[in-house]
Image 1: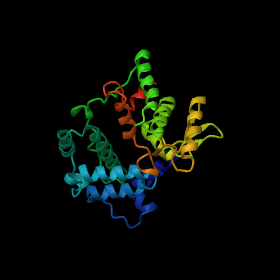
Image 2: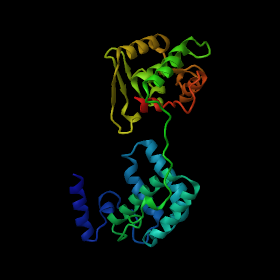
Image 3: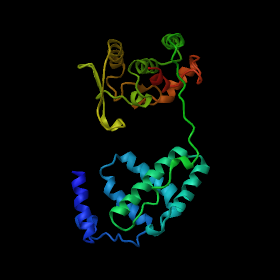
Image 4: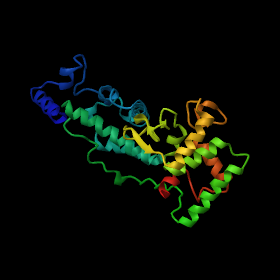
Length: 280
C-alpha cells in the first residue's frame, strides 16, 4: 500500500503538483524557498499523529536543541553537507555521540521529505557517515556468567529478607526481577492490570514496550507464589510493587532496588540491575 501511495505521489510530482498540498494541506506554503524549519514542521505534523507521544516529544526536542540553532532559518535548498557536518561536529565536541546518531536520522528524514516534495534534488545528509565521528564508548552493564559467582549473588539477595532495613516490597520486587529477567523499569511500574493471577500470565502493555506490542510473560510457580503474596500486600493499590516511601499510587523506583544491591554488598563492578538480563 505504501509503494502504491508513493507511486501515485510521484505521478503528481511529474505533473508539477505537490502531493501533500493536493491531498490534505491545500494552504501549505511549502516551496523551494522554504526554510529548514518550514519543512521540518510540515514533516513533523504528518508524523506526529502516528508516533508514540514520548517519541514525538524526543524528536522535537532533539531538532530544536541541535538542528535549529544552525539550520532553522536557512533556505533548505541551500543547506550543504558541510553545514550539517559542522552541526554534527559541535555535538561530537559535547560528547553526545549516541544523540548525534539520532539527530542525523531526523535530518535525513526531513531532507527526504523535501525530496518527495520536489523542492530539493539531493539529500545532503546521504554522504555523511557516522564513521567520520568519534564512536561512543560501548556501555557494558556489570554482570556475571560464572554459575558459582552468580550463586553467591543470589544467596546474598535471598538472605536480604532477614535484613530489617530492607522492606518486603523491595525484596519481592528484586526477587521477581531475577525470575522474569525483565527491564527494571518494566518491573517497577508493573500494575495489577498486567499481573493476571487467574491465568498465571504477566501482560506488559504495548505502550511500555519498544516494539509497541503486548509482551507476555508466563508465571513460573515461583513467580506466581511471589505475586500471590504481593497481592495480599498491594492488591488494593495500582502497582504490584508500590513505593514504600511514596505510597500506593507510585511504583517502586529502580534506585530503591539498586541501593538494596549495594546495601547487601553487591558492588557496581559485580552486578547492575540490567546485568541480570545479560546473565540470563
